[in-house]
Length: 484
Image (cartoon, rainbow, N blue to C red):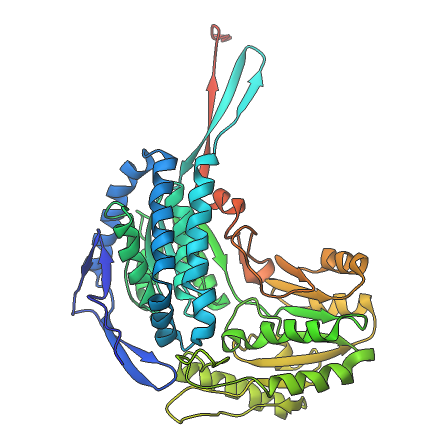
């Protein structure tokens, strides 16, 4: 089972290699097998990528938006045509089941390219009448953007950053996670096959040092990161040295609130999607499930039954519903959280153990009940299929407890009382909320967090604000009135 790319990096319209860079082993999480070997970007590769982006961006900014849009739309069409092979690659790289990657990865990336292709030609300035004189504004691209991706949704994240950046006249240098580096290279291939000029979308591989070199380079105008809070702090500080534009989508410990009048089966479905999809490796997951005491027992009984029916196994089998965690390190981290939850007094409802072949990074979908707010499981991001169920009595109580966290990425509410649903959502400190649904992130809607969960928004028209800047032009139509 191999997935070796033509070379480690894609720079200035072509694959390039420099074997003096440190080796990166790409491992299939279901078997522990090495499926590719890449090399980290050397300073020479980084310099070449940034130089080509700076050169190409000036000409790209002068291309009519509708012409830029045609290229992105062609790329979206190619992504959809090759969805199956891209999904297989993503499954090999991440371990996510093919059942998921066929609908949630390259397909959603294509949606992003298509959306911003349609949006870009509509982005205009405005005029401000001032009597005789007037002001007009121009929306200009920022310049060279650096994108830093996470390992859970590699091609989707690459598209979420590339689509607004390129459609609005910027160039991008993208660094995938070293854990899942493969699909961003395929995206670069497809963009250039669709007609994107060389230098506008470059992919360089590497660990934190490569990311730091990109973020701190004076040729960079903007940084967009998807990652953890500790990484976000480092990136934010480096970008601040050059006063660069920054958007960051970081971690979360999101609340999912289930009132006793909710449709229990739908609420359980939402909780399972918000904890077990992608083996729980989603930043917006609703990992603190607050269940009103009146339905607690019924909720837990049905949750246990449905959880124990989840099919784990070979992620390349479309019947598989849940695959492994992405790496041995992630498996060890999640198992440590399970052990600590037991030690702190949480009640294990189901799961909690490693499963499957010893060479794969599988863990059972896990549910803990009787979790309290002070337990580690209720405070820290696990990033694995471990659900914490907490009890509550009243609306005011659960709002206060839901907000008692440094995070603020997402939140969900399940209730048949829509007045209450809107009232509660208005009080929740989260950038992305759902009512009677969970983890749906269409490109048409802004996505992002508050507090320690990030700054700025991805997707929708809101992304225009983060990939352009406004130039104001004052037009004088009469003689200058000077007191000198």
